[in-house]
Length: 226
Image (tube, rainbow, N blue to C red):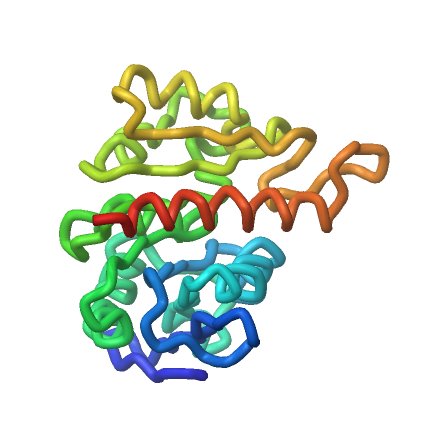
């Protein structure tokens, strides 16, 4: 299901993968909604976002992938962070209507993860999922974005490649510091910023997808508990 999202920057859209029951039929009263944004290099068809959209509905979780107006318009360059935040927030009412009182977990990959962190307080997200959080530009660790990662006052799960040039899993763990368990970092062994592993890695594409789905399903389920 596709839902258009009007905004000042032009139309965006939501790609909705409804929660399913054991028999594969739609499950209107799923446990939660996972609202995901894409990165600055592509749209909602990224492999990790697609894996969650295909795998989590079977866990009773509705997955909503948001495509920013610049992607819908066919542009190749993402706008500045403030415009990304505005495009994301324009979709919040439609996501809330889909949730119908159920918890909403916000998240995204790369730049989309930054947006979800920056706006978590405004959207009222129950938790945040970050796929490949871009802690710093490649080779520029002094330009840290740790403040954004530390911003949400709700639980945060970060799934980070051990070979990510935008910040390895170890770097993100160090940046998270002592947050009393509020921020959890799950390393994806051998993965880069796209959460892809090399040909000789023990964890192939299917293994990465399975790891992401299991970890995120457990995290969202915990966030949805009363």
